[in-house]
Length: 438
Image 1 (tube, rainbow, N blue to C red):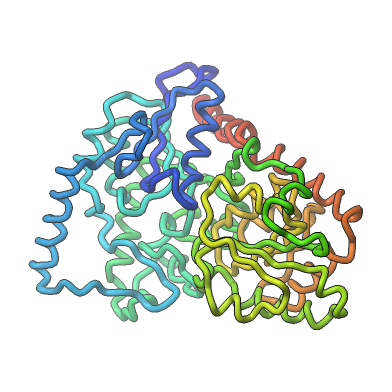
Image 2: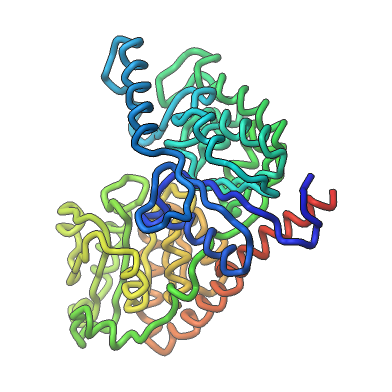
């Protein structure tokens, strides 16, 4: 199966479509650097050139981008419509036909010029589909590790199935498109992916929430190997810092004894659960005395939202969309990180906060089920239960600085053992070595 000895370090091709220096796509950079730092021969394949990093392999250049634009334009002309169709609110699709990836397979293959022992895939969108995976496997004939950042790899194309369980029955009659056709494009995609997956035999890596609640129930992925892993975090960048110095730097008044931080790239996104957070903060506010309220400050990062700022009754400061290098300081200055998403494959910010030694209050969703619930690292509230979420915030507040220190220590210890670069590489390579012996 592999070209190197089972005890040797494999040559790795890591594929992630999005710019690994922006937003949540930085997760790709974290995995890449985790392997680089441990001496692995790893190449990073992405969609477009990344400024300042010529070592990353990009599929597109100006000429190829122009070709794709003309291809898209011709497709719209054939359909007789330039109006993009959209699924129902809450559902997300990037493209409908898995046999026709957004970037032609020949373009992708032309940039893969070495023989690898392992292919790892993170972000798909705007670059690959199952057809691409099939083509890469035909070229490489090597194991494929999939690290899904959403639910698309287990469905007929939907990235967030919301309240639909069609993926458990091979899709068709897609709820997101109000389809009554049992063999619509979602069923066709499922059938095609079944063929591809049966050939390439991918190994999926994800948190236990995604595995138990979704991937293990999907008719597409239930029969494949699914391993638990937590998102890799740069534990040298995301680490505990001097809280007093940071509060001076960011102008936090000395009278503020409890700082709660929350963040998201787009604070208004429905799945991020901000309406539940606003309700929980309102409930908590009413439970405090005027003096206690004066001790609290709420801070956030992300594109500003008047809907949010107008509903927080505590003293509040939004730092806007901040550079990734600033995030560790915001985590470290806070006494608690608030994570209200109600439908999320992560979120990565929970793991980042814990690596900084900051306890977390989150709903029972995503990575919080592995890193917060029953771990002594914060509080895991019942899903969408705003009273329970408020209870979690209040619990950490009333502990005081000394009472929160054991929580902070456990956060950092847990992060080093489970989400650090080394721990993630060790987990992935343990599975790889097992495959090489089969």
